[in-house]
Length: 207
Image (cartoon, rainbow, N blue to C red; front, side, top):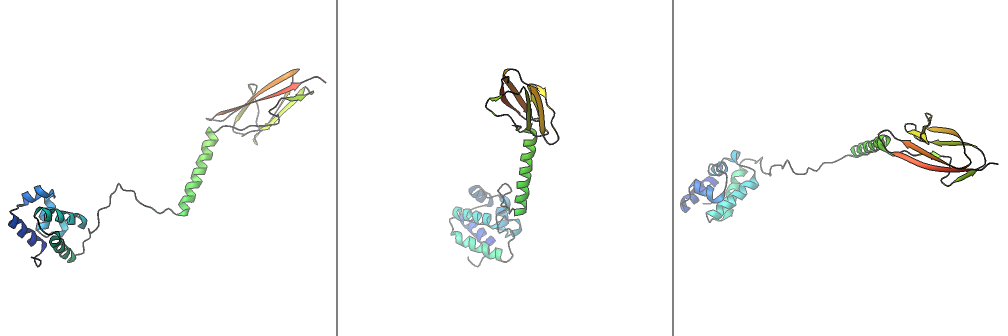
């Protein structure tokens, strides 16, 4: 039987065991087009070799035959023509490994950094640098100059009064102190972003 080709071996086994094609299909769940291709030695209509080997193992089990006989016959048949389908088909849903060059990594990092700057530019919280200390400051000068620095694109107010900001982000405001404790609410607002508010207090006593 070893000298017979795969189709002849399958045909003889099926006749010997009383199997028709329909009965073989029912017992193995092999698609009819592939079972027919096996019975006709039609390699062009068969799937990749791993699938074919699986089909032959099922057939050997159902026909109670040594699977090596069928596998050997299939190997001899396939050797006559290089099997372009000798590998499993690619799973298009599987994760594909890709090589990322350092140039792409650099571009991704740069774009990420620029994106962070853009988000912070429009949506971040403003920062205020000011010449007044956080603790209460005492002075005997009735004129107080409030100076500081913020992002020139932010808006600034002191006690609800809008303050002019230079293109460099500098601001300056002179105020007349009242006797006793003077409180200043300094607020900076970023476009589409958050608001930063700080409180500074100055105690004025007459000379």
